[in-house]
Amino acid sequence: MTTTQIIILVVVVVLVLAVVAAAVAAMRKKKAQETEARRVQAAELRQEAGGRAPEVRESKLAASEADAEAELLRVRAERADQDAAQTRQAAAADQARHEDVVRRADAVDPDVDHRAQGYQPAADLAEPADPADSVDPARRTGTAGPAGSSEPADPAGPAEGVGGDHRA
Image (cartoon, rainbow, N blue to C red):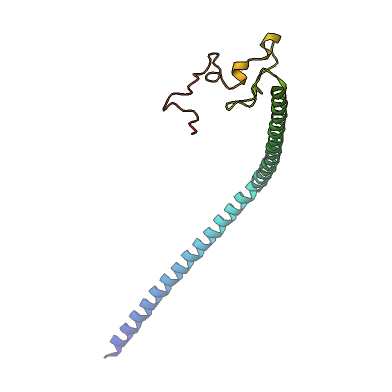
């Protein structure tokens, strides 16, 4: 190899290294610009988020208030359920006392056969408007027809296959 060839080779190598160095420098500069752009974008997003902080606090407060109101309503509903249960229990006790009084009255009344097989106390009877209506022996001795009917029942009992009590 001649001196000229060596010089050309060295110049080519130096030029290639210079181009590579320039490319590396350009890439670093571009990367630095992208990094700076990301920093700027992040700062903008943080500023936007900071501007929404009061809205977030307000929505959290509203959610907490809604939770508190829901809990209060749950407590009220539980109390209402308890009150309703107590009222049902008191009504059942009143009904039992009423039925007991009616049974005692039926036991004393000579027109009522309270020992009949189909006997039902007339606990659902309201106070009669006419004293003559105070006793309905057909209804209260178990010989009445179907509920609410004023016709007497069939003395042979219900027909075969038509509901009723078929005890032997």
